Length: 296
Ligand code: SF4
Ligand code: SF4
Ligand code: SF4
Image (cartoon, rainbow, N blue to C red):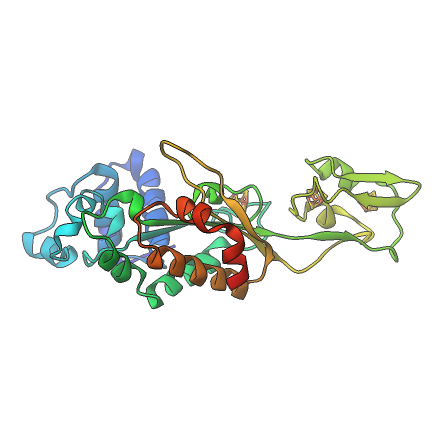
């Protein structure tokens, strides 16, 4: 990720032995905010997020320009956490966390999770999610009222979509091509960590109950006997941590991008139209996940 001149100058002031770590943390936060260029504002926001409060390296005027908190008494608790505000000090009542697969050239990567993450962020902006949630909640807005989303570039799920209100990971479904001859090299069997592939007399079978659609077997098969089909997303909803942690429920096992975005629309509508301030998981349990499926 590129850094502009003022951001680079701020980084140079950090002791050399922690510069690499600081750079990584700033870039993670910038990416979570949908930025592609690190500016002074991103550095200051990261400093506040990781150190609890800004250090006195900006002038009061610069700091005032960087943070203009919305004058709304409902936000006084959230103001303790920089992650709930954008660089201009406006509240952002959702967080979208991509995995780092594309950034680190992860060998398991199916799809760059930043692509869908940015589209989910844009959709939440279009839906005025923050403003509508603020209008809905009568008292103080608390961290658990905000919507948590995560996207992972493969089923390894490093950004933990299973414990988010709305979680997605990429999949690469595979199938056996009966027209290609298996040479029994066993590379697919050795690669599959789910023990989902059986080879017998040059006949290939894949146990769909075990297969997690990581696509790795198709990548190593030299004859094309196992083929990958179009990349898709698995969409899950209602995951949470806290006093009563729950793993997310499967909503769409094989969704394309437009179905994933439609699922987000339906979930947002459900969150905002529910009269209670319950966590999304509770709302889903009250209505049943089938109700969401029907609306997609
Ligand atoms: S979720 Fe998959 S692609 Fe993303 S960082 Fe983890 S292993 Fe790599
Ligand atoms: S896609 Fe992944 S889990 Fe499924 S059979 Fe191939 S290697 Fe195993
Ligand atoms: S990798 Fe392909 S050719 Fe080798 S055993 Fe598996 S299916 Fe057969």
